[in-house]
Length: 141
Image (cartoon, rainbow, N blue to C red; front, side, top):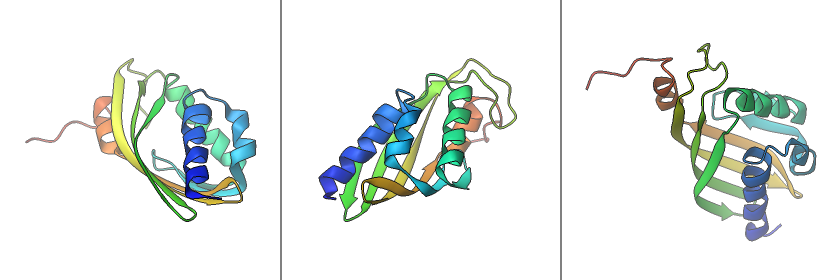
C-alpha cells in the first residue's frame, strides 16, 4: 500500500471506528492478531481484545473523540499526534464517573500490512487525564 492509502486507513480507524463507534469496521481494518497498546496503558493481542478495549473506553466516555492534529507516514508506518476528548460518564482507573469534560494529548504509531493495522502503539497523557477526573491530585508548582 502507498503511504497515502496507509494514512487514509488510519483516518478511517479514528473517524469511523472510534469517533462514530463503528466497531464492526475493526473486522475489516484491524488484523486478527493485532498487537495493541492503548492510550490508557492497556496492552493486548488480538482483535477481540481490541474490541473489548474500545467498549471499555466507550463506557467511560460515550462521547469520546479523537482529533488528528498531525500525521506522518513512511513505508508501512503511520505516526499520528492526537487530542482526545470526552465526558467522563463511566468508571475509569477506579474512579467513579464525574461528568467532567476532559481533554488530553497522545501519539500513536501504527504498522500496517495488506490493508490492515497489524500493530498499534498509543501513548496518551494519562497523568493529565487522571488529574482531570480527580484520580490523582495535581502536583505543587
